[in-house]
Image 1 (cartoon, one colour):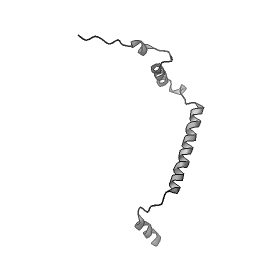
Image 2 (cartoon, one colour):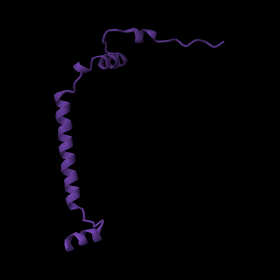
Image 3 (cartoon, helix red, strand yellow):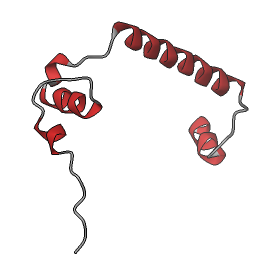
Length: 79
C-alpha cells in the first residue's frame, strides 16, 4: 500500500483574498468587475502599439513594391 501524499486542502477552502497567488486568481475570477489594469499599464501598452504601428508603416514604405498579378492590372488600364 502506497503512502498518501499530504494534501493542501486548506488552500482550496480559503474564502478571503490573501497574498497567495491561488487565492488571488480565485478572487479575480469571482470578481471580474473589480479587476482592471492600472492606468500606467494601459498607457504603456498604448505607447507600444503606436510604436509598433509606426515601425510597421516604415517597413511597408521602405519595401520594394511587387506586382502580384501584373496581367490583371494591365487589363484594367486598357478598359
